[in-house]
Length: 70
Image 1 (cartoon, rainbow, N blue to C red):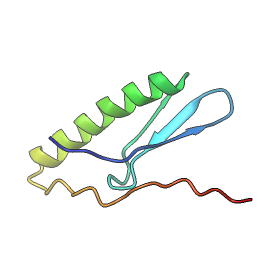
Image 2: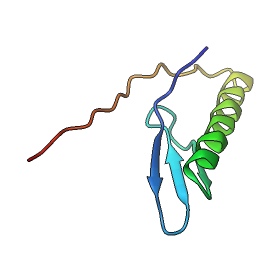
Image 3: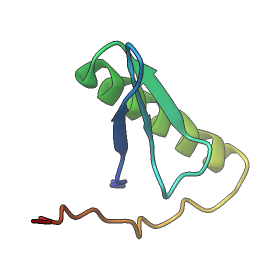
């Protein structure tokens, strides 16, 4: 099993998502939930493509934090 950080951003009328550890792997959706599901499928397809091309699956090295700024 692989775990990857994804970033979901609100755009004009929809949402978009990407993974810093998987360049070029992106997804969009009408809602946050739909975007998350679409990104899950995009990551699965991305990994399958890497396997088919005999390329290594990158290790997840990204992380996220919230900072409180007064």
